[in-house]
Image (tube, rainbow, N blue to C red; front, side):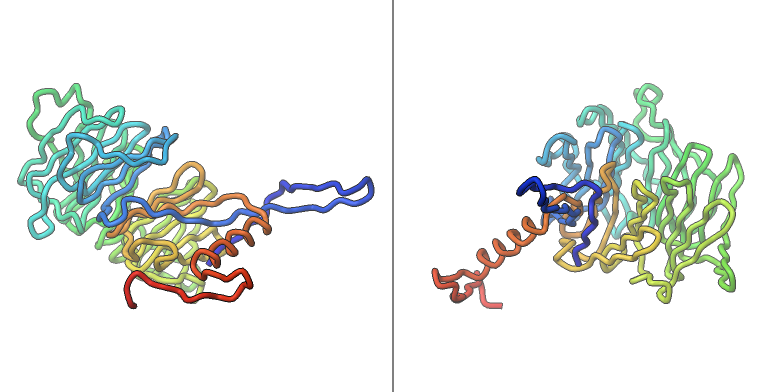
Amino acid sequence: MTKLIILLTIYTINLSASETIIIPSFFQEHRTFVLEGQKVYSVAIASNGNIFAGTDSGLFFKPNNSQEWKQIPGIDSPTYFVSTFVNKVVAISGRLSKNILVNGKTNFIVDNKVIQTVKIPNNLKIDVSQCDFIVTGFQGIIGNSDDLFKFHLGTNRMLGEKYIKPTSINLGHGNISQLFAKSNQSIYVASEMGLFQKKGKSWQKFDPSSGNRSWALADCRSVAVDSRNRLWFASPQGVGVFDGSEWTLYEGKDGLPYNDFTKMATGINGDVWFGTKKGAIHFDGDIWEYRQGKRWLPDDHVNDIAVAKDGSVWIATSKGLSHIYKEKMTLAEKAKFYEDEIDRYHRRTPYEFVLEVSLPAPA
């Protein structure tokens, strides 16, 4: 399940004037689990590299120059959504009653501190399992089964306000799975009714087709625009990408490993990460890679996903957060790693015989 990518740079060892040994280095994929045991609902990355995770214990963050995770003071209730725009961070927290947000709050975070909290009105019904929230400019956009709503985020405009003031964007009904915004005037929506784009005051519905495939999209699960300005979506029917002139569609017969999608995020080189109810999928345009099980994830159900500027990915699951990243290493370093693993888990005598292996509990 590991992937090796050879680098253009190499190490050389000069044994003599006439003999040189070339030692290539590779990119080896690794993973690290953090916030283990917590249900991580949402993950987002600010433009300064700080990472934020909404969990059942509140909102946590990791500064870009640190490996330490800290809790944001002032948010002690579960945090279901966190979104960033440049260095602006907004999180929605509260309690649940049958998946409906109760006593919901919109928290404005600056310099990793809550500077303002504004309540969400009770008549705005938010089923956290069937809606999404994003920040774009000075607007927050939240969708539920009734409609899509926007509200102002400028703290100066909300001084003294007890509640946010959502305004309908007139999308219509339908549970919303994921939102993506290129600007205030260009919003994409993946919903149970299909895939939509808002341009100005009007909505466009997409019905992708490619060759002899034509999909009347329903139950669209995720949407994003990549670094090459291509539009991606994922649904139980499959995955599609639109380059501005034509669609390319992918199904199981095209290599798609799994199709019960939750969220998606685009990478730095036109690649895409998909979250599913049973693992994560990476696609670089040629190769599909499936990341499933404890080797890669604390839990297989992916709640959210975000890609950092270095290309590494943060995957939110119901039992913690997984960080999948690549590091340079040589074949000798990789061999040493596996030898150390063998020694760590299969103790050996001085004569290299394997001793008994003990477990904390029978299993």
